[in-house]
Image (cartoon, rainbow, N blue to C red):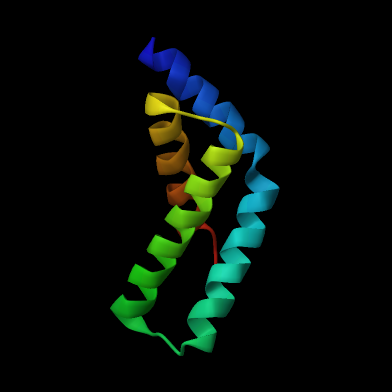
Amino acid sequence: MIKTFALAGLALCLAGAPTLAFAEDACMTQSMDKKLAGAAKTSFLKKCERTACESQAAEKKLRGAAKASFVKKCVTDAMTMPM
């Protein structure tokens, strides 16, 4: 059952990749506007990306394990994209 939710979350995450790119740009722009650097910038970006991913999960009406899997993968993908 958990594997099913994980696979569903992965599929939904791949479908939301274009939206993720927009969220990443918005977060990066906000961090530049605030003139953040170092650990403060990393922390801000992670929180911003998590918020964006959680809102995507809410739009997709994900709950429980599917939501957790989606948000985790979404944040990981957002933080590993070249900046």
